[in-house]
Image (cartoon, rainbow, N blue to C red; front, side):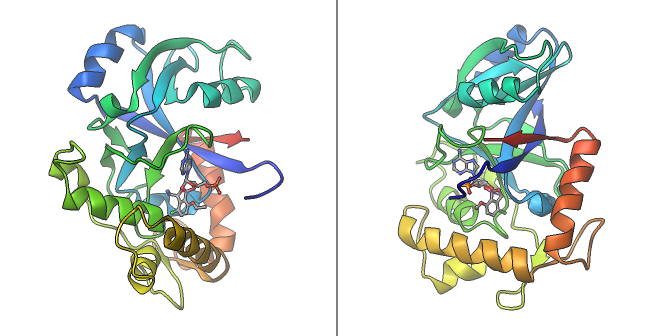
Length: 253
Ligand code: A2H
């Protein structure tokens, strides 16, 4: 964990079609605003490889008015932070339009900015913390061991996790090449460390550490505007472009 403030990128994932449960609870309450799930990431350069998005099924989320036209889905804690950071109009005001359980958001179809697969689904992840980021995690299984292990668990037991298998059908996309692990760093590490499921917390923590360092210091972009460039150079530029295009916001905590 970093000691200073963590500079996240809040990825704005527009709702394309709510799950039936969320539709019934949310749609009438948002005053016609366009609604986005906001996912906090430390790796904006990997967004080309988004295959789905995760929420904690047992967590409570809110839909917060960002202004007259847009609303964001995140935890109440994140909404307060966003208000302090000037993400909302009127400035500093938290306007909760409706609360919703994570489990009910699962199955919602959303658009994933910059992704090779432009439309993805919301899936459940038990390890999402309410105390970190926005409580929404975009999934990049090519480069995040946690995302990869969770996606494989969901595919193995869709009934148990109460998901439609088609929501977990998008395969990992090569985004970054590393000299040691090739163009699928997370799956390679999951295999090497013999990680069986998302419950193997200790090995996953190790895999996450290795994947992060390897990608940042030795990775080369395989896709996008900065294809061929080192990750160290592309990272900030991808973030800046996403923010400039209104597809992301700066979020710190
Ligand atoms: B990262 P740090 Cl490709 N609960 O984004 C659990 N995990 C959360 C979270 C929450 N509430 N909020 C954010 N995260 C995840 C991409 C990614 C991430 C890749 C590789 C590694 C990686 C795609 N998922 O994170 O504890 C988000 O996943 C490993 C560092 O603040 C976010 O970035 O350091 C990261 O954890 C933030 O973790």
